[in-house]
Image (cartoon, rainbow, N blue to C red; front, side, top):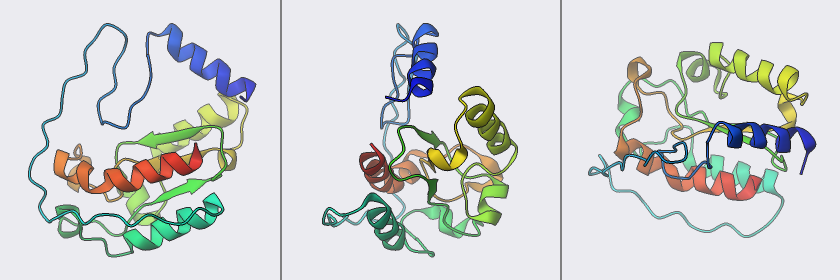
Length: 172
């Protein structure tokens, strides 16, 4: 494991963070995560077909194409998003960052973490961790911007979670 990644993980361990899960809730040791009750999705969630193993970059591109530029798996496509924001970076990265949802800048540019939070993340990656942004992989839980940068709702998370799960699996 990369020394910088190891140091970063040890730092989080010292803070009492015991890990990050695929569920949207993560927590520090001793604090139970609040369960998120799934709500009915606004549209039926279609099963995702497995993709034959190949290079991660190719599989990520196939997943991006499967989502499509005009995804309508949840209500976010009707609430003003400009485009789907998939993920960027090294598909063979040792480290992956997962944000909650794209903001206005990300929605305009089609790339995660390019706004103010993205500038801070890039600074943490480059100055704090001494890595290049292109050496990590960056994605979001939901792929479309919620209106007003509100938190994604459970049905929106549920619609994107299979795609995020596959991104994580490939990069891991």
